[in-house]
Image: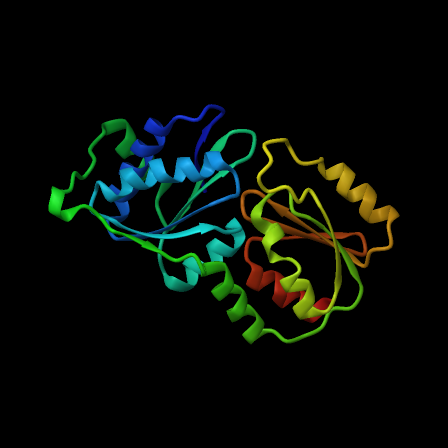
Length: 235
């Protein structure tokens, strides 16, 4: 769930948000970000707040949000993800958003003693490990060509590894994950998909949802595992 949005970059607000997140979870939290510099610095500000409560950070750095949601779910840990889409946004899972709001309003943060400040564990290979697990589990083939709209998110990092493994061709649009320009709208994707020689389409939204288009049908998935289960049975 999205718990923060600002058109401006405000590290103080992100640090306070981190303090609220750390106060509630008070354990290990997985954090990640998209490809923009503002997200990298925003994540750092949020992490400062989280570790100030004594919570530990597992920092997976640059990763698609949909992959991070699956990764965190399988590890049984909450997550906080900083990304840019018309402004700075923070998505959390495994943490109650109403509790975050209440802690921010009351400012009743946990304050760790200097020797109890939380640690940061870096896990830069999280996406590689996630894909390795997927490829170990799924070994089916998908014929044809797909139009993939990455919506200027780190979903571009899925390709060509996913398409190579499952055997389909890919044409990417909106593949500039460091750009602050808005991606071309959905109508452009749909027009290109309908007019072109494509067998199906994938559209990765910034909030960690993927849309699948096939034979006039549109489906949504919030998990890569669920998407691939469907593709295995239907493509």
